[in-house]
Length: 576
Ligand code: NAD
Image 1: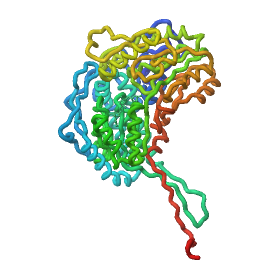
Image 2: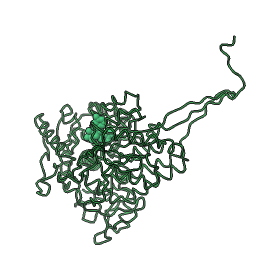
Image 3: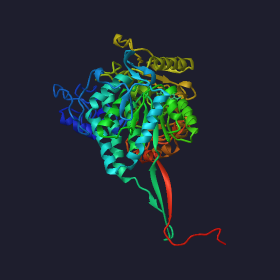
Image 4: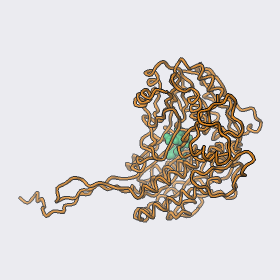
């Protein structure tokens, strides 16, 4: 039975109807696969993240042609985009103090197309001297930005959102090309999640407040929130623009200035963000972008005494190094790290929805997602049926060249990462896990030069390395369990604690289990929802601190207490 359309957002359904796309209505079901004009499966409110998918997609057969350079409105339908970006227009230099400059000694690092392993372009690789320049530029710009009227600061951040939205097609193409992710994901999932945090935090600029404490009338005591100063941001390659936007918008809204260390494997959209920020009216030096190697540029930023806070997203291993580096000057450090998140399916769940959501949970972005549902725990009475249905669903995923709209699973970021994923396939086999599907290269000759792997499914147990270690690829382990207690025990039996999904028709159970899970984000009867309003952070070795939500704004604010003696008394301690 096909009920995929029930997972579309309301806005997506409206958009689809507006374009004359035929939908199978409401709760109706069909025994046939969806016809070509039925909008394809994507989870309600988002997958990754909530604002995404609001404008799904697809003009009616024979209908509108893609609108080149059209100015989208929030929530408006996105037309299909195909093709590679115009390489001639890409920014490749460091952005420091509002100026584009080469790295010290002319150092560059190639950024490579994961689908072909050919170099896209050489990008400047920041050296410690460049990072130092960027930090100084950010320090110089800090008073201007900090003291700017909130109304003005808010308007500039809103403009950033508008420009990202206006350029979303080009940005999606660049992201897809640089990261290897399908263009449909870049356009529908990543890009809305890039502009939305700017919209969210621009509003908050004007409501940052403190509080006045209850004191005798001779005193005025108040708590004030202040920006920290210079924030160093170090981010990974899997969602570069989205992560730069969600961190950057909060840090800038709070009144800080930023040095963004773009990921060496996919730096291009971070550089575009730097350009957009300047165009939006951000004063020079408020946002500096320094792509470069982790061990050089990243380490220099994490150690720099002029940096007040480090906001890091990446692997747990690097997170530890960054935390140690920040200790030298007692930097504030927030860490968004790895995960091995469970999608827990109880026997009373709507299995169709659980399959759809769990498949989405692992295969989005080739499984290169920190909160990927890389373990699916299934209650034993429905285990065999679930595995069969999961495999059927995964078999329909179209692996292909990322720039094609039809592609649903793209290329892994580089040869090394691809090799690592294949090694885990061998580890799983050696551990005695059953390969239900995948684990091999796609046969399509067009994909021979890139870092591709078929969606892979293991049936295994939670003690296996493939169920304990973050693989960061399209590999899932489906593990059986008996009853609620065992589900919770297995779910928590990893060193990570980023996210979890619960599939059940029992609202009491959903509550109970959600409370007992050691993870920062819990999704019930869905997987992978990241509204800008909701804090996203990890338990255990998945990190400390938050992105998004009000909580993230607090991550970029210091708390100051001010106590005024407004009476006439003076305590003369030494006077008698
Ligand atoms: P990574 O840790 O290798 O690199 C992340 C960033 O750190 C890169 O910009 C890199 O250049 C930099 N870096 C590397 N060594 C450094 C050092 N010594 N000092 C300072 N910076 C250094 O991670 P990755 O391979 O780019 O990304 C994948 C990892 O990121 C996965 O573990 C994934 O789970 C995690 N991730 C987490 C979240 C989250 O929100 N929790 C989101 C996305 C990715």
